[in-house]
Length: 249
Image (cartoon, rainbow, N blue to C red; front, top):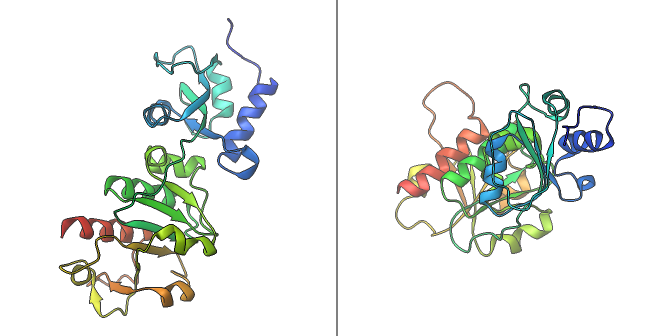
């Protein structure tokens, strides 16, 4: 069968739209995966691959019963969100995962940069977190930029977008912890002996931080020592330090 070569092909237009709207309500729960790495991670995690797109140059990949469609490199370039188009992409349906019963949870409160969201998801996955909850105002974790930064974390880690009213039940008794420049306890002191087995770390908007309402609900406020002159840390870096300190102690 000849590869699809026309950018005006209706299927090409639909894939291009999905690549832009991945994870949004209008996408019907379907995710666009750019590149062999993300496709492999999705398959390993048990996601359903609705369509596997490959160029003639693509390496062989066993995608089970997933329908395979061949497109030209030019058409893949027109669809892909990457600067350098991959030889493989896919339309996938995520495997829904429940938060782990134990382990720290990360809560994102209006973290708006998709690169930060993806990096936090990758960090949470690497540090063995129980999952990540995204409150309103946070970037779409299924967008192309978030998926690239996550490097497969979204495929394996429980990720849920929730409303404020759902937060208490979702945390399953975990106390809220937030970072604050004026907190009495340092991160090392708070995470040391006697700390709860599982907590929920709240990280907020890149400029405004965690909302006052959530800060007031926090069971623990902790300070990351910064002897330098910078006013604050990048939110993804702060998350990495907090999660690492929890598994280090």
